[in-house]
Length: 334
Image (cartoon, rainbow, N blue to C red; front, side, top):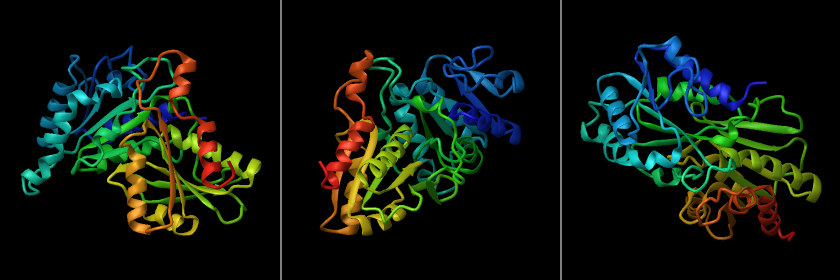
């Protein structure tokens, strides 16, 4: 069994092995510590000249990486907790994302900033947030979220070696211990894959009737949506298409809209706060594309800081029961 954490570590190692232009920068990433979540363990020993530890300065770290990218390298930055990506927002949004436009296409900034987001580990209000929504819609910046489906390490490798624009690569920390699932041979689940480098996965219960509900999610919430869809099928005979996105921005909704043209019911699920979230944009684009008659609901975190205490944290963050309740209401079964 390969976990998401192990897959991402292998993808990072493969990137360093395959190209001498790849450098890895971050705080506390040198052995024997290997980073807060150990994805970097062993890398500084294997690549001592290209794994670089840094001071605690997210803005400085991403700024240095941008300079390296402009000189033809392909740097990867680890920001220890996603909460602190906001300290590097100026470098990402006002500089790295604008390079191609400001240079008339003469320059590019191939760099990846990867970071763990999310809660469910009791880390409290400043180390448990899901903040990628603040980066969505910045022209020139791609926002990608790891999934337990497919091969997240291969997706990270593709971001590092193949994408010539800056990428914010989001890893929900509660996914790290989850086993990677193949996209074929899953018991009782049919999977369709849309897209190549950053795929969208479409799941439905094998042999089920045509779905009457469409679920859209990403990251850990994709796993929660899978669990909820299985229970809806076997407990309520409510059958759903589940879409798990890995590319959040720009949003590529074609397959989702095809499903919605039949179901006319959309439920979005995300761990970030509900107000002005990813789900709001997904719903807005669906309504614009499909017109009147589309029903939609959103499941997300409450609009408040994430508590440290386990029961309180669970009450703030979305879970399977919240998804089930919203889906049943949307299907007229509440």
